Image 1 (cartoon, one colour):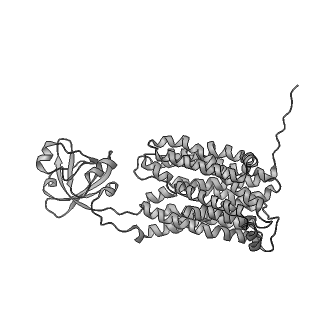
Image 2 (tube, one colour):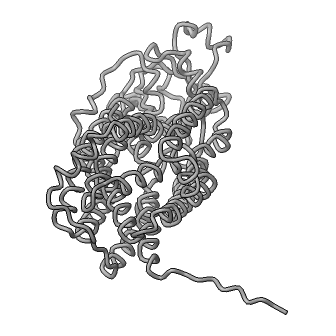
Image 3 (cartoon, helix red, strand yellow):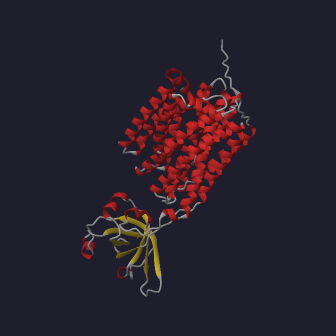
Length: 479
């Protein structure tokens, strides 16, 4: 006799699941890529570090502020809707920024090599060891030289290859051991006439890190840097505030069953992982053979998913059931406890360790030779392999071990994770390391939000989550 199995779906939880899925999925297509988007715009690592140092400072103050505003006006739906809209708009405007072009013209000596249809370039402007280390493969370059009558100039585009000294015909002509030696192969036919008798101008943006001279324009004096910084700060702060208020709304919907939080939050993880992997793949397709990575697909995916979320938010009923008559006084009571102070200190440490990871993990992997697909796959493993199961069972972990032991386990897992990053040589080995993300983020985050929801006085949940969120994604990352 067959037994009919009933699968019940709690329809009251579908709206919050949908919001998590579409909003986090949209942001997942752009937020992890922002540091490398900045790199593609020509913003150096120091400037990127400055931007993502100011951002946590803004988050630290804005999260508690928006939490207080939400608790005070008791209209969490309107606040979330406004934040989602402003965040998406700020992110999308980034793709309209042109890259910072700062090509440096280098005067070089050249010699035409008729036997292989190329041109040898000799110059003191580059560090030869740096050239050999950084650019073992061909890069794009441009060579400009005057015609014989000096009335006009000819520009040739082509591939630049690093040559090792050793060609006897070249060594006899010029001291190649003291000069940078490059081979330039034009993409079009050219004549060797006049090339040997004139000083040419060489332009190659890919070789700028190896220059021994520096006549470049400071990135801080460009409009690209300041517009990107403003948009990155607005979008980054808006997204993290919306994340926190979404958690507050989730606990309001769950009511007396807060242990189910992880099973709602995992839909954000599933969406984030799938979209990030998809966007990494689309970025590779859009880039093609170009040396400049195209990140536009992620921004368009974000626009579609966030647009759907905004339509859903118009239909979702989100209300705060509890009201605090004196928010500051009630929050002050909970922070008079040493347990809460110690827990907040642990959140701060976790924020510092997470901030370093979020800011520079992709940069590290790119330096190790990772493709855009691998970057997307890395986040997919973090989300789908690590976060989803740990979020699903987070209620069991918290019930079995308690909030403090769960956070302590997350700190220990972070120590192991950073140790493995230190010895990482092949970027593909980062994938098994990312399984630890389930402990360093999912278990920790469920513990942080659960503690705030359980111990916050009625009516101050959003404020409490804002304070913890400010410590985690604000002051912690600022460190």
